[in-house]
Amino acid sequence: MNEALRGIRDRILDLARGALAQANMHAAFADPGNEHWPQMSILNAAHAGELFLKAIIASEHPLLIFKDLPTLDDKQADELDLQMLLKRGQTHDFAKLPQVLWATAGIRIPNADCYERLRLARNAIQHFCEPDEGDLRGLSLEFIYSIIDPLIAKQFELHAIEFHEDHYVGYDYLVRTLLRREIRFSMPNDFDLDEIRIADEIQNTSADYREWLTGALAAVGKEALINA
Image (cartoon, rainbow, N blue to C red; front, side, top):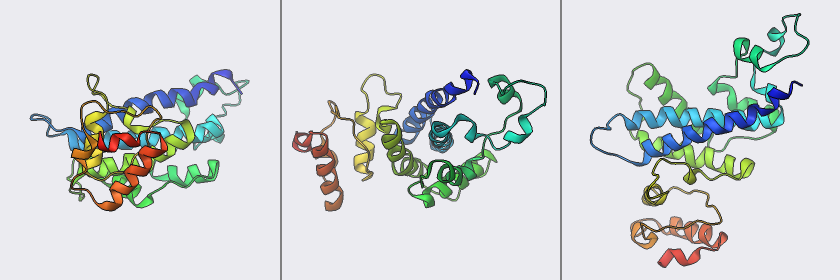
């Protein structure tokens, strides 16, 4: 295999991190003048999901993300190279990626229903129509933290909360949004918060969510944060 092809997965991952940072920002924050952010959060969440799924597939073999391999042979080149892929290759469509992921890596995506709802919302937005889904931010966050987050935590030891565009505070206010919405998320071993108090943010959450949060904090040795 051409050596340049071996770097495909890492190139995809770099772009996926950027798309996830934008998706988190657009889904978790709201400011006057940014009324378009809920729609952008859907587009960026879908983009991030597509790229991360392709990165997992490419971990098995970089050419598995392409759906038209037989047509790439021009009967002249000695080997398939990156430039030929860029000019002629077509990767699998977003709608088919869960099936490709299972067929190539043996992985079923979690929350397939959410994947389909976000796919439909993305298609509607791309065609300049109002999606049926009312809470677009909520749908984006559900997609990120019930599909992308568990997959990348297991496959790449990455945590979705660490990808954001709040370069001054960090992920504190993103986590606040997740806590208030009772969204479960993976935590890095150095998880910490400086700007918010967990106890304040979970006052109105369910007992089930508080129990999960206590266990998740304990798993990374941060159980003291629950009452800090």
